[in-house]
Amino acid sequence: MKTGIMGNFFGTAIVASLCGALTASAQTQQVRVEITNNAPDGGVALTPVWVGFHSGSFDSYNGGLSAQPGLESIAEDGSTALVSSQFLDFNAANGGYTYVAPGPADGLVRTGDLRDQYRVDGTLGSPTGPPPVEPGESVSQTFSLRTDGSNNYFSYLSMVLPTNDFFVANGNPLAHSLTSLFDGSGSISFNIGGFNASPVNDAGTEAESYVTSAANGLFGLAGGQNGPDTPQGSLGLPIANVTGSLPIDALNFVEGSQPNFDFNNGDLYANGIATVTITAVPEPGAAPLLMMAGLGLFAAVRRRRS
Image 1: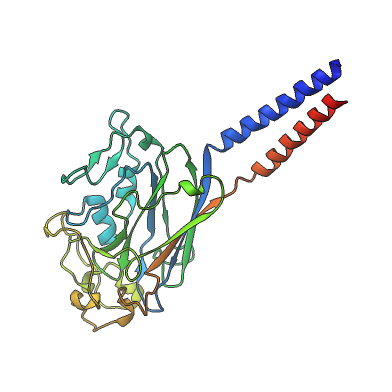
Image 2 (image 1 turned 90 degrees about the vertical axis):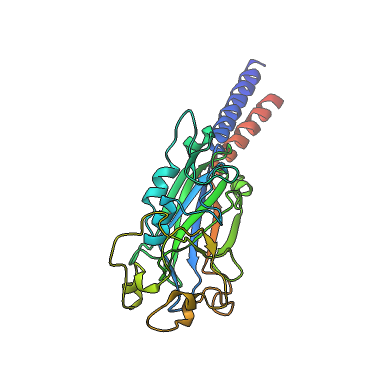
């Protein structure tokens, strides 16, 4: 009888311990973000794509308002450094930053959300060549996210090349929820940029011209950026969708029409400029822990019966 009681005690302790370990493991979830450029050969590229995971508190832009400095830095230069630093800048009293305040106000403001201290971000660029994500290329990265509401939503930002201030982003911070992945399985996928996808946006920070694009050399094109950025807000135009059957016609491109740059052409860009796929990565230790818990419970019950 004594052996049975002790066996049952130790079996229960093992199960409780392993369940505790599983509970601790379940507080975070690994996800893999993959971004594939769908453009045809000779089509547009994306600068390294900034991605962020947040509580729903980070609004990167609103159409009709001006582009803030971090967004402008991406839209004109493809640089993610400023957005990343602002995204991760947490103040214990006032939360983290968002670009768009509730209501009609515009500008960088604190959210008041204390979960912002757990934000996660990264930049996905080409590992094999020049930084842009070129036609047919895929880039990916794995992130460890909290499942307590701090990292429930996904945002992205990238410059479209070769333009001088076009970008892709989700203007709605709640557009892409990851909660369905937090059981360790499944994936979500969506297209970005142009036809049958979220729109390409004009930051409104520079007069449109491919001549001043920062990456003309990558496309074998003449011209390119040869001066400092336009000061933030100096052009005075709000963010707007790039619409029309041939966006490149509005850009005064000196070397003539380049059809494969037309990201609003459904024949060339049936799935937008790129596809984003976010996949849950099962915790490698979960299955062995569950097996051990099951064995411990089985042994305890068997001893109790004997």
